[in-house]
Image (cartoon, one colour):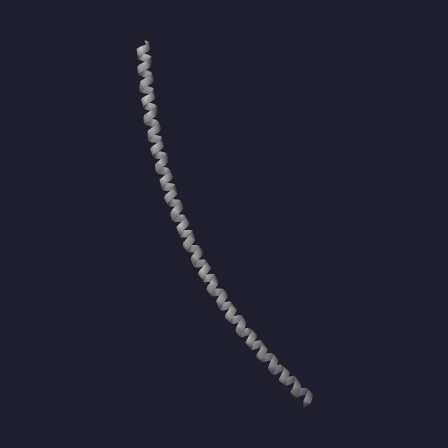
Length: 92
C-alpha cells in the first residue's frame, strides 16, 4: 500500500468515526430528553398524590379532633351526673 492509500483509508475511517460519534451523540441526547420528560411527569404525579394524601390526612385529623372534643364533653357530663348520683346516695 502506498502512503496515499493509507492517507485515504485514514480519512475514510476518521469520517466514519465522526458520523458514528454524531449519531451516538444524537441518540444519547434523545434518550436523555425522554428520560427527563418521564422523570418530570413522575415527579408531577407524585407531587399531586402527596398533596391529595396531605389533604385527606388533614381532614381526617380534623374529624378526629372534633370527635375527641365531643367525647370529652360527654365524659365530663357523665362525671357530673355520677357526682350528683353519689351525693344523693350518701345524703339520702
